Amino acid sequence: MKEEIVQGDLLYHAVHGLCRVDGLLKQNRSGKEVLCYSLVPKTPNKMKVRFVIAAPDIEGSGFHLLVSVREANEIMEYLKEGDIKAVPSNVEIEPASSLSQKNQPWVLAQAILSFSHDTLEAKDQKKRQMLEHSAKGLVGELAFVFKTTLKETATKVRESLGGSSRINPSVLAALTHASED
Image 1: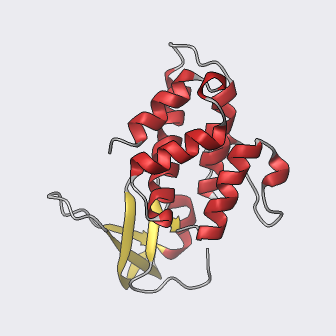
Image 2: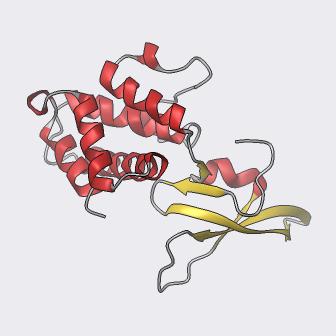
Image 3: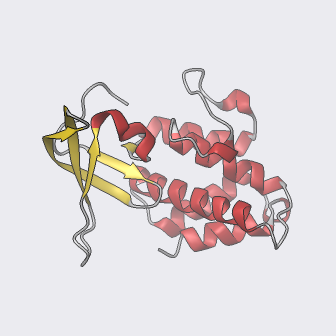
């Protein structure tokens, strides 16, 4: 995360999507005054959701600054190459199973890549959910960064993974679901 998040910045969450920092406020938490970010979804909904997250908790919350176009292209190259060497040296990727919030787009890409060549058993619900979460999160963020539709972005991700015959059908299904939201 950059040192300072300011009002108006856009943050992304794999589940909640794109949110705007609506305000900065101080709250008393555990007897200490803590800076908090008030986040509202960029696409308003009838629930009028607002997230208030303490600054020290922002990274662990899943919200992160959007990747740049350059980094989004590096992620696509990583998916294409299928090689950890394609990851820039300044990016640390945690194991995909942890779904760590650090470098979230890279973690999601790593999960999609690892699932694309694995076989998922029908009864392995946890892995299937992780795959769906990864596809939705990565496709959503890249679509915003590339200024394309979800469907176009899901197609680009699928093409980066290689020919459809090589990709696990569960990954193809997850990318299809991610393009429908």
